[in-house]
Length: 208
Image 1 (spheres, rainbow, N blue to C red):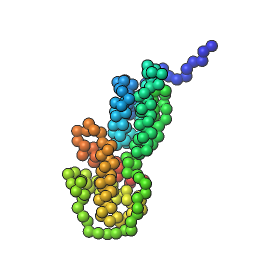
Image 2: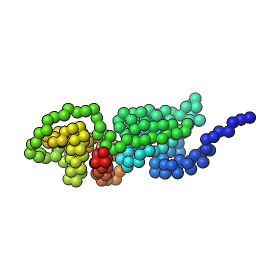
Image 3: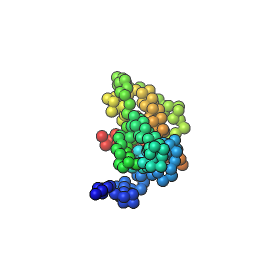
Image 4: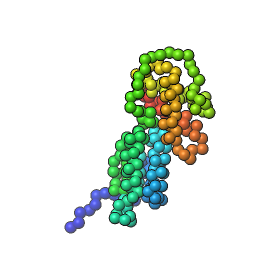
């Protein structure tokens, strides 16, 4: 007598997944059958965008590779390697296998993008305010103001409560680079998205 498979059928599984995650927190790579390289590019952009939106937990569907050579999904394996890479880069907190062809992914908070090995802590030093870094000069003044606020919070988290202006400027440049890498490439207004990400990161620091 055969044992009944307790897992939901495909249609029922989809209904459960949509009830749990909502359609905006599900990436279905299986539906478009991309190459491994295309799947990785799409998955990374999507995961970074969802991180900026503080989605928390998302579902990535790769398919199980039933039609692939050797029954191994090249897309699944490529996405799995990507998840490990994004974990090292503070985009992903962790992931678990949801089904044989999907992963539940917990995204790191936005502020995690700024976490790095402890930088040298310099004695508190007060100097007259200097201009913002020239490399950020093209940004809107509000964007630079948000970058400054975030840099001060990040340095305070390292124990630097009254940083010298050069350290603040360096931190602004570092944070701008980290956040820019996470912006969705197809965004119509990158600066507006950047401002939203900065505001969320500041909120996360303030929330503790």
